[in-house]
Image 1 (cartoon, rainbow, N blue to C red):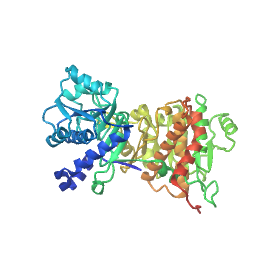
Image 2: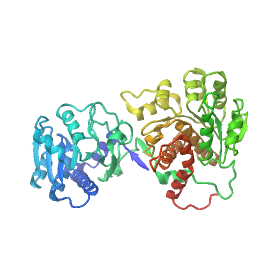
Image 3: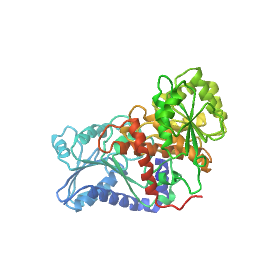
Image 4: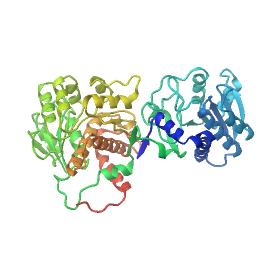
Length: 505
């Protein structure tokens, strides 16, 4: 599991190691780790490799300069271009002693532009994790030139121009192939749009982990997922594995029912039950998925989680289905049309708050805005958390770096999903997966509150993303149907990564 920590927490942890901070030990660990990661991405001999370091006035620039000294001692040609002459003095001295050169940036200087254009590696040490707002002055002017270079671009701690806490970008930002971060991963590495500018993220341990507070967010990885989809125990039956109820589809969008049910069946629940509310659609669903049981009841005793809304359209019939599902005593996942219906009804919103079981909302950006969510100025992580607290729900804010937030402050960021998921019906598949995981967890007694619900929703996002990777691994176009077909393999790979487990009883 990846733990992402806020800037304030990382700075506090550094100050808790005051002697090491004051003596430069932390900076030495950071710069040594940074140079090691750069060497790792270079192949063959590094002698003569051209390195350009863009340096600001702070400690981030100091990390970059000391790393440049390490690289220069390995035979690389290192040139540092500073936004000011007042860069980190000890770092500058170390670079010069190692044979590196320093010059103050002049964006109109053709020689400097030529130097950047010929670089093999560009190191971004302009501003660090404490920077806020848009890049200004020379830093803003040099970034487009750095980004245009055909070099390996490496960000020091965070890509300059990206807010390390929110991932927001206000203006130009460095576009990294690799980010080497120190002490802890930051949310801005994982949340859009910062995620797209981070490239691969490598963490250097500088020895402050014992002083870090609880993470601002977590990201599940493959072994974590495997433990959450354990498979049937030797004495399990279909009801003990969880029953996911699906209320989905309409005359306008019948395919949504097929996709949601198909995903639910492959999401490790023991059984799927389809709510028969549209003339003829239940026969289509059962004809495609003969394992499914169709029922006109919402209040049956077997269902352990309901998924409601894929393919719904505003109107009395679908509104009544949303209300009936929300009056059930089990966890509910609301998606797509159900979110539009919910956003337009104060009564349904009050019903959500009054429920004794957890409710999960899975909006895309447009649905998020209709529900009252606002990302401007605070970023997706804080925005999802704010809506979760306001509505007393778990929010799955879909998009690049999907954010999962619970009203108790628990947050997850999905790092598995990619752009192949941007296909029609993909959201219907995701809601079915999440519903199946919640159904199984509830049946096993593993769903004790909103934090657990957020964790299993995050696992659903991971499986959705892995299915996308598997479905498109040969470069073929990915469809919602191919996501479902790959879901079983996604579950299997997660289980394999978790290692062998004894039989569950």
